[in-house]
Length: 86
Image (tube, rainbow, N blue to C red; front, top):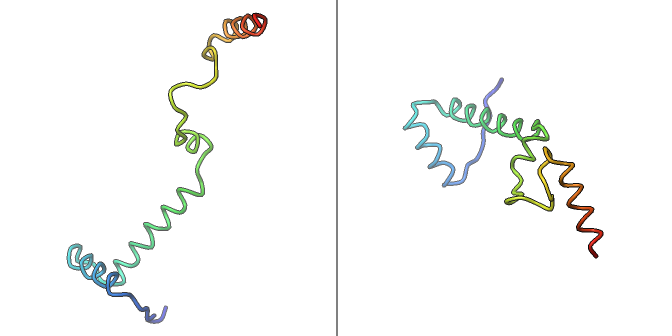
């Protein structure tokens, strides 16, 4: 692949310079590593399982359920009693 020229703003140029000095990577090595990390981050967000999304939701402490799923019979009993008291 040929040589590519890109233009960076002053802030990005400083960050790149610091990364090169602290890691010892070349400019192309630092850019390649950054692209790989960004690619992994994007891939992780696009291939998430439904459970991963559910786990991130803030559902609070409980919900509208009367009983836990392990006690459905008791929950139905309570729901029917509550409904017929009206």
